[in-house]
Image 1 (tube, rainbow, N blue to C red):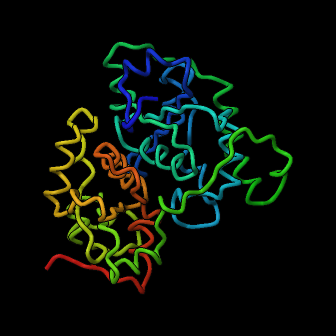
Image 2: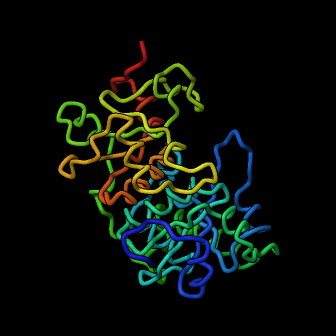
Length: 306
């Protein structure tokens, strides 16, 4: 994979397709009522494997698509046919959305050889590159095997006798827990950027999930994730990204000032982490529970616009 960039172009991927494993990590907001695996089966980059962020997740929490354990991720990635030596390119059907979550997940599990296809499937199609439209039994089998591997890992059933080709190693520096975010309000170690819309951040627009309060985490900065993207769904150049974060009040210039990202359910925070990597800040943790966790707890402080 190219050095010092979190994204690759459609042309780069087309030229190197045989040297990488390609993952379709499409996921949509529940209200969109889209079926990402069905869409994958009828339109995907040749050889792509479907990566389900809802299935390759912790089944023991009510919070959506939280990171699973090391053992569960190792089992699921192995079931998908991935190995620790693979270079991985992730993409999604929107352009640059849920694939950022998959990019961050691999890095959070100690696999830095991962990049994101800039502009996703729309950019690949726009470049005139081929798309597989015939449903694949093999893809369906791997999709099911990964979900089963997660279930088995948590039920301790048969996880040990699986052949593991992928060995996850959790990187705690890339993840924030609710307790760390609570502590951060006082100790101000991290500048926390929130990728939700301005209306949700201010608490004037309702949250899409029932039972979740509106507002923001005290001291956080609002960087709605579309602001780091071009209208075509590609990542803006580094100089533009610097201006976006500075415009939101984030001190981006001082490398001694750690940065972190949050959002609604831990998906678009990863878009901000990806954007910050393009500026050279590769060490940005994501608050995994994000607002869905914070806003549904009773003892967490919330700021609303006056």
